[in-house]
Amino acid sequence: MDLVLYEVKERIGLITLNRPEKRNALSSELVTALKAAFIQAEEDTHVKVIILRANGESFCAGADLAYLQQLRKFSFEENLDDSNQLKALFLKIYQLKKVVIAQVQGHALAGGCGLATVCDFVFAVPEAKFGYTEVKIGFIPAMVLVFLIRKIGEQRAKQLLLSGELVQGDEAIRLGLVNFVESKQELENKTVVFAQKLIQNNSGNSMMLTKQMIDQVQSMSLDGALAYAARMNAETRASEDCKKGINAFLLKTAINW
Image (cartoon, rainbow, N blue to C red):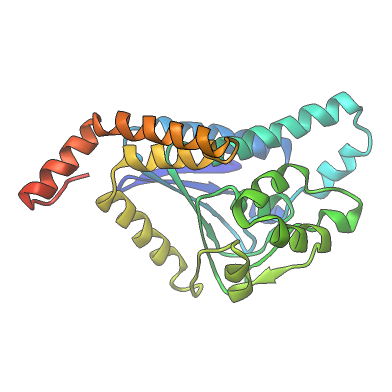
């Protein structure tokens, strides 16, 4: 059985974790398959927006037991190689040229919470629990904390990472982990409707460049960030999407993105 499923429906690339019997727990094979699926979706000209979802009751329960048992015997070099695999997956999702929406129908824990964290938007059911539980087993949420601090700030990141506590529903929204909470019956439909709004109303090129800039400016000085922004602004004005958009705005016609 494929660990990850990939399909395209109405310009949405659907990437589905397909290890329900293990609560979609992360393994080296699953991480590799996920990265390949995101690369495929990024290069697929029929895809404009991506939804990451999962089969079964859990979204992703973090590392599986067999994987944790293996870790106890790894050398430093093996652990570093394994860590770099997860780093590469998180970075690929975070820097993907297309918008990624997580559709979280069940618990997202440890590395599974990390998967949701690096997505651009998160839709979740009220009962889905989110948490970085690594500190409870003597581990550290090393890779995800880099992204989480960017996403929700140091104070809230400390609250979650150092306590290892689980949050859900409105609390997950308040902390910035989740954008929208929907009922289990409405989750899929609401996620798809939101994705279609992005597809129909927004320029793919503009969304790609905006994501890129959000990533880049955070490591720049104020002057450097503004110089970069001015250059990107000037370059984008010459793009076909911008010309198309301005022309449609001036003529008061609908834009077919």
